[in-house]
Image 1 (cartoon, rainbow, N blue to C red):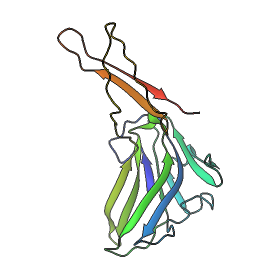
Image 2 (cartoon, one colour; image 1 turned 45 degrees about the vertical axis):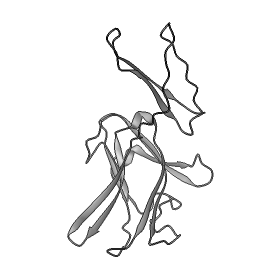
Image 3 (cartoon, rainbow, N blue to C red; image 1 turned 90 degrees about the vertical axis):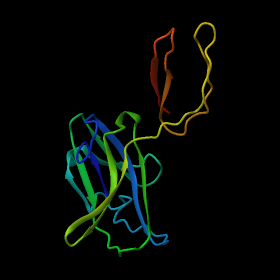
Image 4 (cartoon, one colour; image 1 turned 60 degrees about the vertical axis):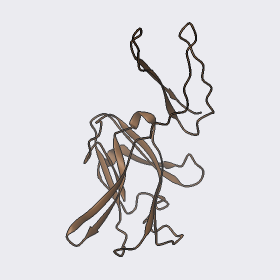
Length: 183
């Protein structure tokens, strides 16, 4: 289990930032998290920050008790880390979870991952990109002046709102995005 920022990917090479609260590995229906120090309760012990360690700080969690790993890097900086290995058995089911907050500006700069190894090396890896799906929340018709109003429910997280017009025979296409930052 680990992460990559602007390395081993087709990343944007832009500034990357995230707040990581917990890695979770739950084998075969068990309820106990088997990710070693996955919640950073032992600081950074057992976390191999092998690339970009200077971009990482361990901070008090902004979600209550405990700690969070905060990574903040400038454009072109790279980072990678792994937790200590967890023994698994071939064919066993598992649940892999990540609790993190990724600012919208960091879309496309990296991913979280789980890698399965054997004595010869990597067998497979599964990744979760620092990206958010686009969600259509509705459409609105413009009035005679080309204006429209659309009321949204408050988003649960920081979001990017994009309004777009594909263009027609009379008007060129247009698109604008605004980031909604929650307090």
